[in-house]
Length: 165
Image (cartoon, rainbow, N blue to C red; front, side):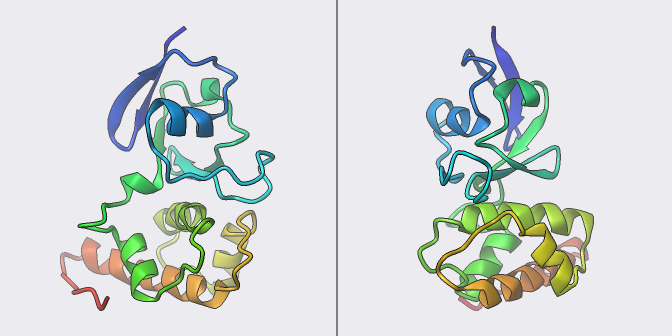
């Protein structure tokens, strides 16, 4: 049974078993390696992607659950040459240490900022509650999300801002 979905703006189809976790389909079928396998139990957040704009743990989301839906991965936010506002902010403020959790953090933060353009620190912490980071860059991650919000507001108003990094 072929399952269709839109991934990063592109229509995709796969014949993977409908019970296969979305994470495996993204990585193995579509070659998108941004979402990471951390625990496989939905407890670390390394696999976070967005489905129809909501943060979702892809390691525990069966493929069938995303049939006909829109999935956005870290690769859909920008490129190395043209990073999106979230990526630009994390680069600018050097929020990544080992980087393993960062794609999941960015996707959870992106989902938050799409709903709430000016979140408080408490709202950001709540949105990232399922994303674990062992490196200790929490304050830089928090600052990066606030910076991404600024960049998104500037982009929405048509202003351009240069990157500092």
